[in-house]
Image (cartoon, rainbow, N blue to C red; front, side, top):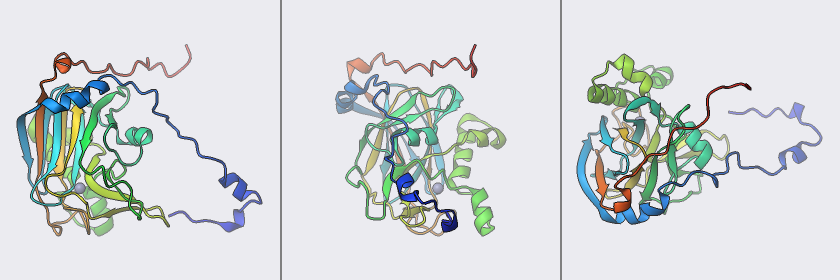
Length: 287
Ligand SMILES: [Zn+2]
């Protein structure tokens, strides 16, 4: 928490604080390839597969470029931690921090999930969100954040001195290792900061600390994505359940999450081509 030292307060403190904020990364110039046809394309979705993620576990799933997938709430209010990789190169993975810098702390329809350097291209676009009515509550909370990283056994050990093996971090490691036949030591560095699907979070008004509150998600709600590249997804049904009380333990009531895969019969998507990775040449100096 930030300590305010009034002894250092300059005479013009109010003036310095009063300058207007400037958006760091205006998004008007982002490439819009494919955006115009997605509304039409999602009218002709045909379900081709599904993967059920058990409570306190994770599962991986593959989504070809140009297909759609949904994360669906089933049975009860449950939060999910989502990882995305470019299916043919796991070094290219979801970059929650830059996605946050571009689109804000919480995502919804129209926002894209960007990949890591040096690739820096959209992996997926959110095309439908049944929780888009929620907006911002009086606590400053909203849903689907890209601020919370993921629950993990290292922080649990640090704060509570427990060895808990069903945090989303470990769940995602086991799922990725199983799906791609990798050792845990290879899989762990590939697991990354998540999109917290359905989770309701924010920063407290007074101390600006990260908080969670009971998710508003109910069975039947879903978040839908368009795959902008060939994707490998990993989804953990967080041990926090609806995250109304605690995570990193077996205390909360947990439910499964369903991943549904769809192809679209929209002809314009038949030969969908992903955007190329960033064109920056990686010189990092004047030549
Ligand atoms: Zn979690």
